[in-house]
Structure formats: structure tokens, C-alpha cells
Length: 338
Ligand code: PEP
Ligand code: MN
Image 1 (cartoon, rainbow, N blue to C red):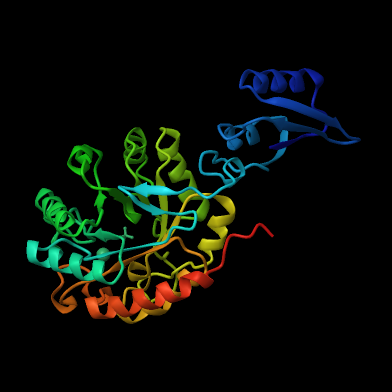
Image 2: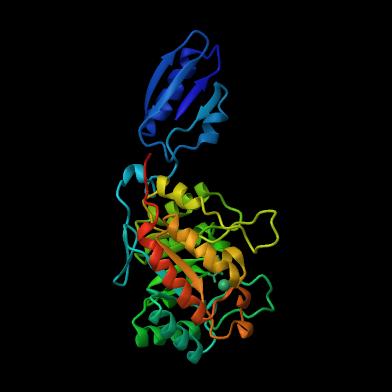
């Protein structure tokens, strides 16, 4: 961090600033110019509040040169993280497709879909038990019963299960859920993130509808600061002025995130586009761009789905997409510092 002081700053005021920074374990490097004095902050400045420094009387400008996230920062972890989800690895060259229904609806539905997506090569089964719906009158999920049905499907297929948590009080209910999803709407539910940071569960953290990449990384930091390093990031489309698609898939988030963080990155083309016909092209593009995995919604009868039918693939359509994805995966872009 570089702090430019206003002209006429008194030595006594500078000493005061230096003492305060030293008390925070930050070293200072002072450079006195003709008009301005510049203070370079040396050390880990991730916990320094930039706004607090800008607000000081003697400060003209402040510039961060080190990102405020540390645990999620590639600068401190050069090699890609590999997250192990009950034996299924993702990241660092391991690629996975997570597939399944938006919501768990019945035993037959989730078990059938689980079998079909497994046959097509999916490595994990998704299914919402607690659904964050825009309307309180829409289907809210089967709750505990939904988790139970997912566990039955896991028993039959061996696929690790992925489900969304909305409330930290539910953490005990998710004990056997292999990958706990934090949905877009909860990306900045910091109390939930802190509680998940105390666990050692793998977490799939989805980017918020209107959040920047840096905010996504700061949310990952919340989980990791608690000691839980098992974080997988997910880009699922952001809100833009475009109305032809449910959201706009930010494909450039893949190389940008690869540069900034060592954490695995999953793309969800289903929620990004909102329509089944968009899933194949977006899944292929995301794979080619270097995503570590995909999350795709699959339903046995999309027209009758209780949630997100229009964006759900049939098992047959999923099979075709998965096949193509695995074919192009060997040619995918790799993270390149240059
Ligand atoms: C989901 O995965 O079912 C979901 C609700 O996703 P998002 O949080 O990305 O909207
Ligand atoms: Mn959905």
C-alpha cells in the first residue's frame, strides 16, 4: 500500500502515522520528495482499512498494490489447489461435472437422474433441498427429507452429493453432504461464511448476482480465514442489462480468477443462461476457457420440474453435452502467467 501525504505535513504527524502502523506490524518506507512525502507500507496489509487511512487529515491519496485477500491469493499459493470431495478431486488438472436436478422432488426422480448422469460421466450429484426462491409461494424444497433422498441416491450410485445451505443453523443437517453449496443470494452472508469457515467441509461458493470478482474472492477469504481451505468458486452468470438470457455468463471470470487465485473454478451454464438451448454452447466454451468443472441442471421431465425446468437438460441432452465436454477438455486453456 502506498500513502501519499499532503504537502506541509508536519514531521510530528508523520511520526504519529508511523507509530500507529508499526503497532499494526506494518513497516514503513518513507520517501521525501520536493512537494510530497510518500509512505510505503511493507508487510501484510490485508487487514489494513484503506478508507480509514484515506480519511486521515494528512493523507492525499492511498493506493493498494497488494490485494486484500491472502488465503485465496495465488501470490501466496502458486500451485493450483486440489479440493477433495469425498474422494472426487477437482482443481489442479482434475475436472468434474456436477449434475442433477435443481430441486430434489422425489426418491424416484433423484435416484433416476443420479443413475443417468453417472452413466454420462458426472462426478457429483447436485440437488437442492432448501431452495432460495424469489417468491415465498414457489416450491421451497423438501428440506430434511430432500437431504435424506440425496443420501439414498448417493448410496445407490456412489456419487458425492452437492446441496445448498441457506442458514448456519442447518450445518448439522449437512454433515453427510459432501460439497456444501453457498448460493448466489448468500455469497455475502458473512455470518454463514464464518460458520462454514469453522468446518472443514468442501464449500462451493457461487458468485452473487451483482458481485464483482474481488467481492467473490473476499467471500472465499471469509471461509478460508476460519481455517477451511476447501473452497471451490462458481461463476453462474451476473445481472446485466441483457434480458434475452436469465443472467450473463462472465466467461472472462475464468482466466481472471485463474490469475488471482489458486482455487478451482466451476461454471454453471444452467443458471447463467436460463434456457436449455444455451447450456451446450456455454458448457463447451467454459471448458475450453479452462474451467475446472461444470454444474449442470438435469431433469427427467423438464416441463414438469418444480423449479428451473426451462434451463434443465434431459438426461439424453446431458449425455451429449458431457460427451463433447470430455472430448474438448484435453485442449482447454491452461493458466498462463504471461
Ligand atoms: C442452484 O444452484 O440451484 C441455485 C439456486 O443457484 P444460484 O444460487 O446460482 O442461483
Ligand atoms: Mn436451479
